Length: 89
Image 1 (cartoon, rainbow, N blue to C red):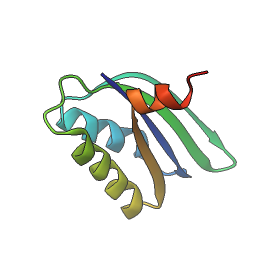
Image 2: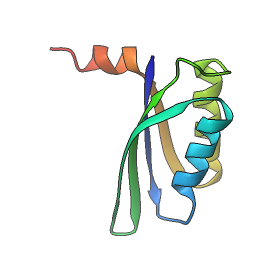
Image 3: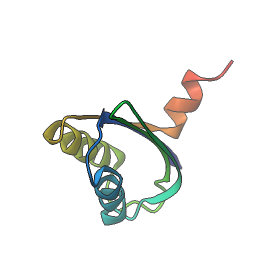
Image 4: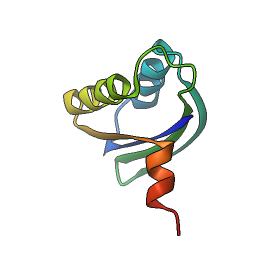
């Protein structure tokens, strides 16, 4: 199972490091990352393997959202099944 994680906000040092450390804490493997900085705005999309996670998906998603709120970032975590359903033609 996979999850899509998006992060958007003002660029600061350590965003990628902190998000990936939260993933590592829960044994979630980052498969792919795409990031850019546009006019001082940090934008990142991650694909993560959640099949070995040590917590349920809701806790993981809530913890990332909480980190985002504390650091003025918008972080959204979407389960692969939901993502695929939304984009199925």
